[in-house]
Image (cartoon, rainbow, N blue to C red):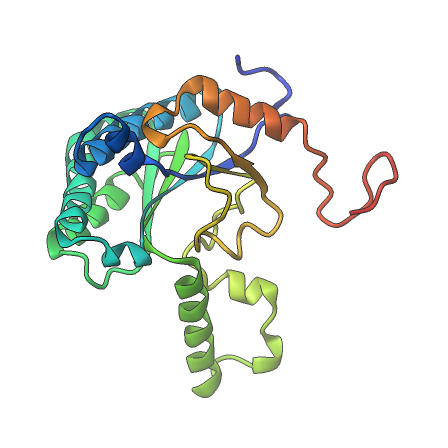
Length: 246
């Protein structure tokens, strides 16, 4: 797929649920960590391909709040992967005009990783070719609960009128405030669920599920997902051009 002049059919914001690393490794008789390592390489490729194709916003689900329940050795390795990704790729991401933002709770995350996140966000803050948002220690329900808690505290201390709380006010409290909602959510590995990912933001996203395991996800697979999106009639609850209703 080449970039063309009709950017209206290109999703402005793609969100990726990168699933299947463990099964990829198991199918090859490897340890799960090798699947995660291969998945990190796939992420590097897809960030570059997304930018090349003209996508402006890319969100990737790298570690969920539920992932803490995995074996301690695997959690430790996943933490080290993020650390190494930022340390080794930050200069390249910055030179390529990628702005980096990491969303999710900081509780349980090491001071070193938090410091690296702050550095990455600060260094790339003025870049605008591609906005890479990494959901790390993130959960959609937790994000909504935290936002509701902040609004409740403001209402309690008198700085917010409870009657003024609406969808826009709540959205402004989310971790993704200022970021457009995803147009297209892609999940790899054959699973067909959101798994607590961007629950509020995905209300009108197009959902694309593929059997391809994340380490094998290629530019051709990304282009297939974009082609699927281009064929969709996005009505947002309204009447389509043909007069059909949702």
